[in-house]
Structure formats: structure tokens, C-alpha cells
Image (cartoon, rainbow, N blue to C red; front, side):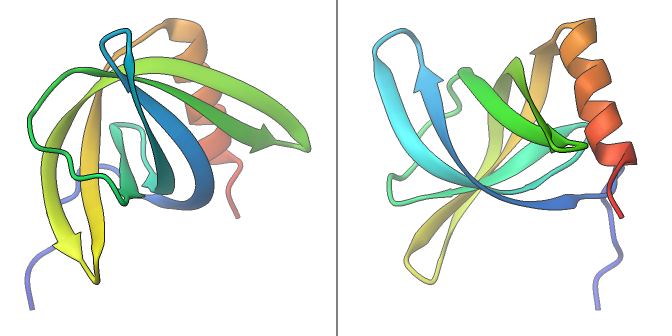
Length: 109
């Protein structure tokens, strides 16, 4: 069995999100899990290239929805059971969003 290479633990997340490439191309996806460093998504739309994308992710922290905004770069993609799975590394996130994400990850059971 392969050795775990992840730097940060993942927290399962089953949420519909919309990803934007540039200013006019949007795709719908499902966020599968999230970590301090990135997010795993699933979509019916394949990700063909490594274009910078903009993400808005709603996180439920103590029954309050907080939205983080950030930019990320798809680092890999693969097809699994007819779904396009892709991992996005967070690249640009302001301090407030990073703090919100940390609060969300720390509040997980």
C-alpha cells in the first residue's frame, strides 16, 4: 500500500460550488474534500489545462455560513467512474479567508 504523502489532513465536504476561469467561463462542480492547502472537486466537465481559477466556497461554522474567496490552480485531474476528479491547490487567499478556513478545519469533529 502507498505511503500517505498529504501535507495537510482532508475534511470531507459535499457541496455544490461554481468555479470560474477568467471572467466568462464557469463550471459547476461538487467539492469532495478540503484542506488548508487545497480542495478536491468532481465535475461532469473535464479540466483540460492548468488555468488559474477563482473559487467561492461556503463553510458552515457553528451554524453560520461563511464564504471564502480564493484563487487556485488545478494540480491534477483524473476520470473516476465517469466523473472528472481534480485537485486544486489554493494559491491566493487573503488573511481573513485563510483564518475562516482554519477555523472551519479546526472545528471539525
